[in-house]
Image 1: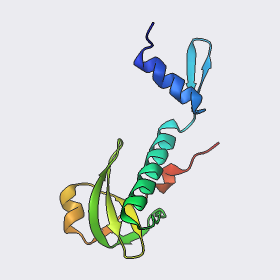
Image 2: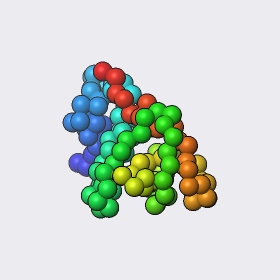
Image 3: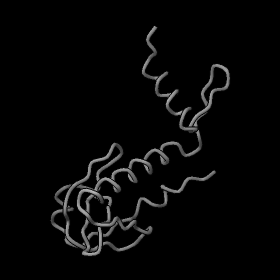
Length: 119
């Protein structure tokens, strides 16, 4: 008998210690969505770093970002602008493709504050 998509998702989350079963119920880890977003961001940053041979420089919340807009990076949760500052690249939360392209200097609030996982 084939398992359903929701059952496979729960199995995956359980295997990753992001959920646990309690009888017929499933209890999800605290801050699950932010944990999944952080993992996706880290994976994409590592992939981009390898492809473009530039180091990823994570932002600090509220940090001013300046550099050259290089590309749009689409993720499951939102899209980011990849900014090359000459020493590496940073990802800045962008509001629209036009905004990112027109501004050489982006102010961005870093996604880092929600990247922190509390135990």
